[in-house]
Image 1 (cartoon, one colour):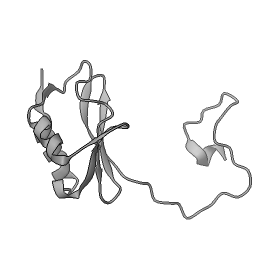
Image 2 (cartoon, one colour):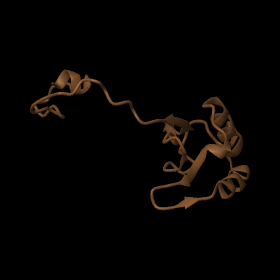
Image 3 (spheres, helix red, strand yellow):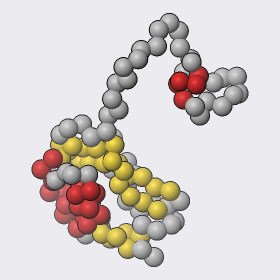
Image 4 (cartoon, one colour):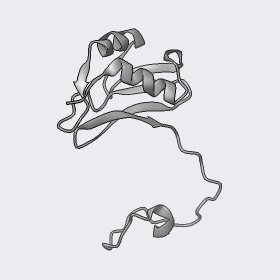
Length: 117
């Protein structure tokens, strides 16, 4: 059992990604948002087992920053953590003509758009 406090885990994630509480635009899920203060209060009281098993922290919880980046909950086999996300940069090269977005012939599409086209 690996008990983690959600507030402390979040503070570590903020520091690691050079963010502060003041950089937060909103916190919530797909259907609601809460204030930073509401989150801090609830997170301080939330100790959970981040080890293997089932997820304990809401999997759709996000912390969105003013610069468009965000933290989302990630998990693998019940182990949980914050993942830092940001908008990808637009590539310089534009594909012309028709494009293929999926491999419907049963071949491997894991190479992404570049291999499909």
